[in-house]
Image (cartoon, rainbow, N blue to C red; front, top):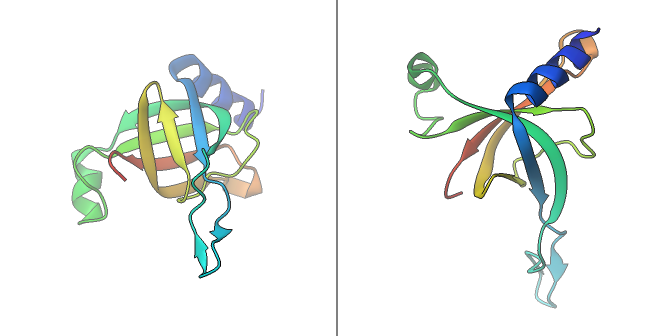
Length: 120
């Protein structure tokens, strides 16, 4: 079993179903582009939610807020690449995406690490 399969298996075993929510492209209202008022496009994924350690929060020095979550997203079956303009819904909670880090040592993408924040 390769590392990608191992990462996906562990996220599936300890994680839960989640949904990435991608906003629709902006629309032109005649005066310029504005956000599209339509509902975002959902993309199913599997995610494992964790917290950041106090040490990581200290090192981040302002780049993290209290309550930010570390969300590991499996690449297995994921149809899109997460972006900071997306949101992620885990259960009934919708988190804004502050940061996306692809974990791809040696060029093989294992999983995405997302910094999720409530009220974004």
